[in-house]
Image 1 (cartoon, rainbow, N blue to C red):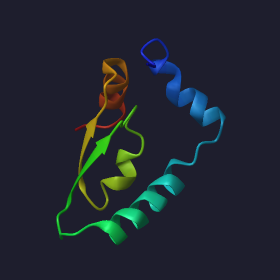
Image 2 (cartoon, rainbow, N blue to C red; image 1 turned 180 degrees about the horizontal axis):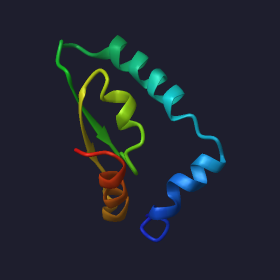
Image 3 (tube, rainbow, N blue to C red; image 1 turned 90 degrees about the horizontal axis):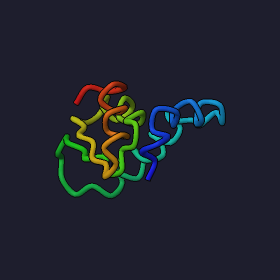
Image 4 (cartoon, rainbow, N blue to C red; image 1 turned 30 degrees about the vertical axis):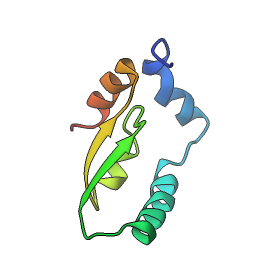
Length: 81
């Protein structure tokens, strides 16, 4: 879906002042309240460019998944899985 704009995706959201850390904090709160085991792995589905992963990695071993190969290519540069 974003293949043609994947390399600009993070720039657009940076200009919009997207708060990845706030979103990670909110997601972690939900995960902690809903998880049923003591596991420490997290699959980030629709990971896009992988910028949430750096916040999740403090608490989980993270793997990313996205349908868009170009977004994954950018994610590999942003975050090493």
